[in-house]
Each structure stands twice: as structure tokens, then as C-alpha cells.
Length: 418
Image (cartoon, rainbow, N blue to C red; front, top):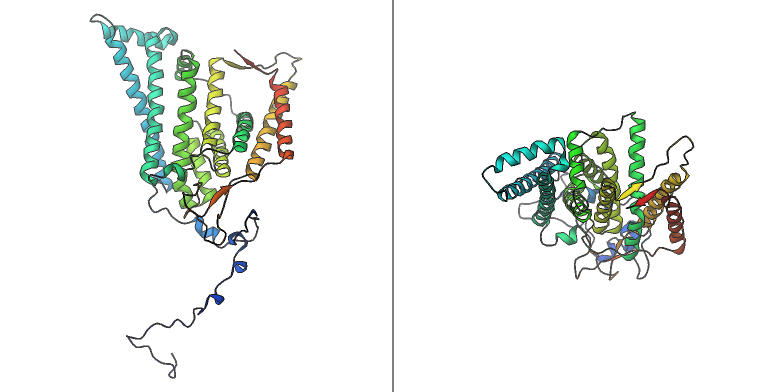
């Protein structure tokens, strides 16, 4: 400090001469980055490639009270989810067996049960009580995971957890795109699996005795029960847990892209084999993208439910894939079906991205509501924001229609229903 400068005294007020003294000196709307300018009424925002200084830091804001926001904590939550699944199965399995044993007359109930268990290890189809107990146990397990995920969301987010995870009805055009996307989603995931196995030179995974017994247990179920347990249960429980609870903390901690990737890796790890981690992980990324573009949790729930339900129908023999055999086998229809499926995935996915839901202010002259973290939450009631999405043009629907026709032309001779 120079000698001619006044020295501050303990009671002196801080100087604010460096701050603007009038509103004219404040940044004006045209001085702001393109992505944060006010949008005139009736005009959609134009996305710009210019850097937005407000976007990067916002992706790094840490959650104030979001459980599972770190990798190790997320791993622990996944283990707890699997533990709940196992406990639910054991409770249902043992409970049903206890009920079945209580109905057996006489004093040799345990011996009769032991004999049925021994029969089950050799011929599962001849042990109806064990098969029924497996089905009941799996049903209780899926119900337990759904309730567990809902409790986690309610405790970690609060009363408005349905709004925060976008558990809202999707638009009609996004619902149609989801239906079109489903066959392509299934076909492409299987093609990726085959390509990975060929690239890794891996032998087809042989079914062990436990998997064979489980498949025979499925054969004894009704179609409706199998679809509810294998399709709807994981569709709700795993999506609420992974896309709703787990991703919320990871995206808050690591940012949007990294959070989605890490969540998808955990989603794949929850499904077992190393190769399955890669395939299911890729599916997890796709499910997450549909959630962010549609801002409706029902879209990934529907895709997850549809994928599992088709697998169950194939396992039960209600849906069969006809593969030509012999030296002169013609695979043209299969190739058409696969090409159409990939086309359906590409066109519907692209249109879903182009028509993605966007937040716009209701009053362009007032501050617009936005969440404090990257989120799919829709605006709360009474806020100055509304979700809008562009309407898909005739050209887009024409491309979707072409891919559907291509898929159906191959599927008619490649898929059979019973």
C-alpha cells in the first residue's frame, strides 16, 4: 500500500465502487450465452455449439441428500437390491412349501417333501409343489424389489419423487415410437451379443443344471403369471432402482454422460456373466437415452417389460423363431427381419431424439424454472416452465413406415405363434 492511499480503519465500510451502480451496467439478454437467452413466444430454442459457461459446472453440482451418489455407495446399494431379491425369494419359497406341507395328511409330511425334492433334482416336471414354490418365491422377490425401490425413491427424494423421476404419461407420438422401437431394441441387442461372442471367440454358454431346472419351472407356469413375474416385475423394480434412484445420485456426482455410463455398468453387473454385462450395459444406455429424450419413465419401463416378456414367450414355446436348415437353406427372410429391426431402432431412435421434450418458459419475461441438478423432472405446478416437443413430420413417419414394412416382410416367415 502506498503512503498517499488512505488506510482502512476497523469501523470503515467496505467500498463497493467497483460494482455497477445502475441496471444499465448489468449484462443484457443479448450479452448472455446463446443457450440462456430468453425465447420469444412461439419460437423454439435454437441449440448452439458455442460453449455455455453455466452448463459445465451445473453437471458437477453434488447432491445434498441423494443416497448412492458415489461409486462405492452405489455398489453397496446394488448389493442390497440383490439381497432383497434373494430374501424375497427365500421367504416366498419356504412359505409356500410350508403351506403345501401343511396340506399333506399324516405324520410323514417331511419324508414326503424330501422325496419330492429328490424327484425334483432328477425330473423337475414331476415335482409340482417345488415348481409352484419357485414361482411363488420369484413373484414375492420381484414384488419386494419394486417396493424397496419405491421406498428408496420416497425417502431420498420426498413426496414429489414421481415428478422428479418423470413418472408421467408420455406423449402419443413418443408412445408410438416406443412400440416401433421395441422389436429393433430386441433384435439389435441380440445381434450385439452374437457379434461380441464371435469377436471374443467365445463358445455358446451351456445351461447348467440350475438353469435347466429353472426353465422347466417356467414351463409349468401360465403365460400371464410368467409375463408378470419376468416381464413386469423387473420392468418396474429395476427401472425404478437403476434409472430412477441409482442414476440420480451418479449423474449428480459425475455428470450426465459419465453418470449414465456408470449406471449402465452397474445395471449390467446385476445380470451376472461378464458377456451379459456388456450386452445388458448397452441396453441400459439405450433405456436411459429414451428416458432423457422422452422425459417419461414409462418409456424405458415399457421397453424393459417388452424385452423380458418376449424372452419368456420364446422360453415357453408360445413364440418360435423359424431358422432354415440344410445346405440350400434360404435366410433371406431372417436378413430382412434383422435389417428391418435395426432400421426401426435407428429411425425411431433418431425421431425420438429430434422430438425430445424441452423446457420452455411460460412467461418469457420471467425467470424460467430449472432443476438444480441434471434431471428428467418435469416442472412443478405453478412454475414458469412447460415441457414442449416438436411434432414429427410426415417424412419421419414415412421412414418409420418403410422400416416396419421391411421388418414385417421378413417376420411373416420367420416368427410363429402358438
